[in-house]
Length: 245
Length: 198
Image 1 (cartoon, rainbow over the protein chains, first blue to last red):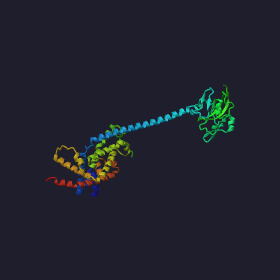
Image 2: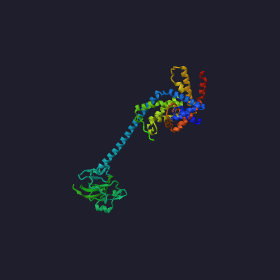
Image 3: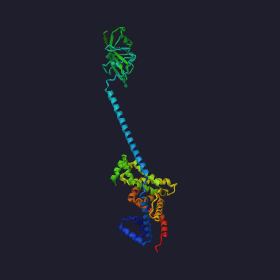
Image 4: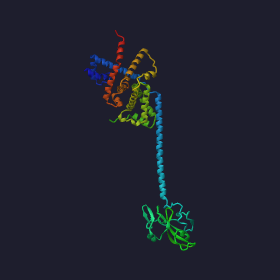
């Protein structure tokens, strides 16, 4: 065996890691014949012994108990944080579910309502006095037209559509249907549609609405169909006849 | 090559992920000594070794999923984390601190000596070896710390160091040559002072 090759093996040989028995035998033979390689081997073996001794002396070295205590505290803290996080996630999920369910409930409730007559209790100054068929007379400003059940819900030909808004149709259509546009209602669009309300009004009230009435002082009631926009304003009227007084 | 997770380690890690204190303690008690000793051999400073041990296990607590069983054993993983901590500390401190031995000598409990003279001599020899190890460049020092002082196999040391087995072998060879050189005066001194047999 060459000395160079021996010097490669000497570390493994001294550490007892040279697995090849033949190689080990030849290396030991060489060390016994070559003084320099013998010295190298002896030095390496001493070093191995010293390192083993050092390793053994330190084999009982441990981290002090305070490290363990600190780490256990950290594990507990971590567990608390994870639980809190999990709780937050559940709460957030529950909140989302509640919001969605609430939204759906409101939507379903709205859908279940009858045709909207949600106009505010203001008929506007346009109809001074209206009387229902049953004879109830209400002041126009306080009257809620929606107390009357609409007889028809309609669109064309009484109305035309301009963009997204409805507008009362022009004269021929009105003539066909018998409706007369009220003077202030001509140009007012119908943003949410309209409904026909059957009312009984005094001739005086009709006169105030701008309808030419022969006997404004008469006590009789005139039955009429009024086109009322969803904003509560009367747009057109169709006289239906007199009801006796 | 896919490596199976040791069933014991697997259960303990699952427990640790769920915040089971008992599982953590079992992992800690199984591995803390080796990690602490490795850090101590690398830095020669007890308080730094303590910090390293704490940091290694903190990492495991904070992020247990970082350990990938396919890449090696849990022990190797912990040593790997410890090795990175140690290297960072060494880099940080290398500029301004010289080696001191307060960590080893200052805080050691005194031992009762059966043979005071022999014990002193042995203790003195070990301290010299320890100091010699500490003066090695870090890459050689870690090879000695893992393979000679912690009795790891080349393969396991290679896992920890993230290099080839051949690299570990050559680093260890070089480290031991350097150590032998450093300890040669001591050896010569001892051989001169040894009583002659004739």
